[in-house]
Image (cartoon, rainbow, N blue to C red; front, side):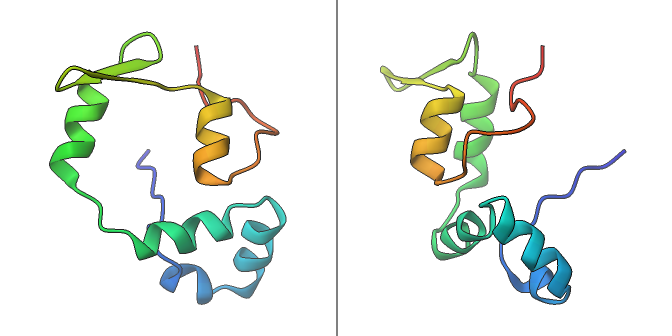
Length: 86
């Protein structure tokens, strides 16, 4: 199964019921924020490849990754299904 996660609101706007759902769970605003930033695929890959035990160290800088931190930085509510699967 291929998982598709939109990185902008263009696809979402084609489906009004999806927009309502995304707004209801607090994800639409995150998509709007994501659309305004420039993402760097190589940096994302480096980050993911170095993620171990909920932390990443890149260029001697350590980033802690947790549901609470993701919620705070993204604005996505920390409710519902767990983000980190065991």
